Figure 1 (tube, rainbow, N blue to C red):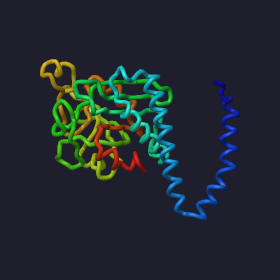
Figure 2: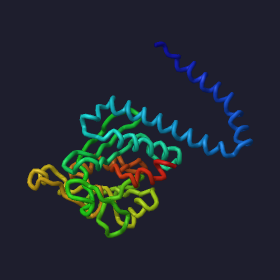
Figure 3: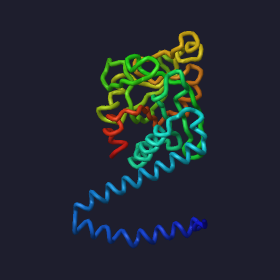
Figure 4: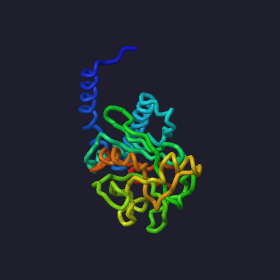
Length: 249
């Protein structure tokens, strides 16, 4: 099947937009209720485009072999594009996904170069001690809950603390993860997140709620993530997926 050259395709889309925009604007004036319908249709069209992008990336990067849930990538990309529109990301080429539908014994954290569709890092990541043992399945935004919080974060500055090189993250979803700073939730290296611990105890260590990574990986990963990248913690929670304003806004 033949396809239009890119330049012709762009010209066609532009021409169509020029014709349709005044018609849509006039329709909204005549019937304001159409604005909601138009907005909903636009949002659904955007979601379909993101789903296609996720499918292409998933296939091209052979992420199925890595165990990454394809829906985790799709939701991560949906939120990533939403945050791009809000201009809250300072570094737009990196997207990190923690897939908590996988057990902690799997390398379930993925650092992706979105522009070049490359997997930069894949490693272990721990969850909060009260979120579960092998699997994280309970989440909270409350201080002293010792649970992980789902959703989208924007990374901030790196610093050296009691856990060595660490990275501050801002939870940007109200009522879901926006207490991250108050809870001192950061990305940091930990010696209890390692294959040695896994082989010895059969389980990975847990945290007070921080997404901790292997100690030896912190110095490589944190500089890539710091200063304004998108960081997403996924779990197939119906409550979160239907209630997230980033995903559904």
